[in-house]
Image 1 (cartoon, rainbow, N blue to C red):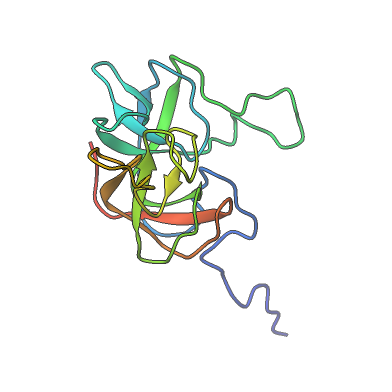
Image 2: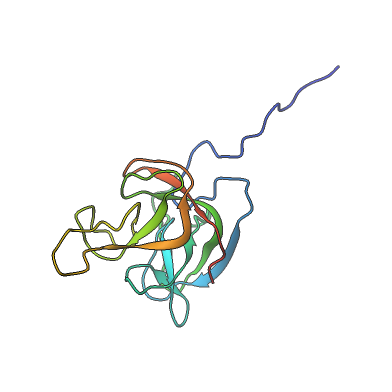
Amino acid sequence: MSTIVQSSVSLYANKRYAGQIDTLQVNSVTDAILDTAVAGFGVPLARTATGVKPFTLVGDSFVGITVRKHTQTNAYNATTATNYAIGASVPVLNMGYIVVTAESNVVKGGSVFIRYGAGAGGTVLGAIRADTDATGGVGEDEATAVEVPGVIFAESASAGELVRVAVTRIFE
């Protein structure tokens, strides 16, 4: 007697969360100490002299995106923290695929930009979007988000939706 236990395997999870690695692709994840501010899941990080911090300045050096640690949050327990605290060891995806929240409409294959200043499209520093969110001012640098070379959108999504991004090279 022949019994089929499972006939197919999906490469993707059914439900997604920011900071989740939801594919069976090869990913590179390292740990770093969060040293200047708390950070949520799926947040771009920048290098500091002693660790990492949320990416919020135009001169920040991108190192990766915070990975959701299932021991850090529990959907059934509202008292469990949903952010990594200052001084915490944070898992950082520095190559591979990860889920983030899109601040603007994004297109598969498009470049990823990170917000470093308030603009017409939003005010949340570190937000991930599809363009520079230029304000159109005269005689000044109007951009409020910077492109991260080597990071692209792996799918299309609307503003506010979860979207998978591909970090195509290792950042250190």
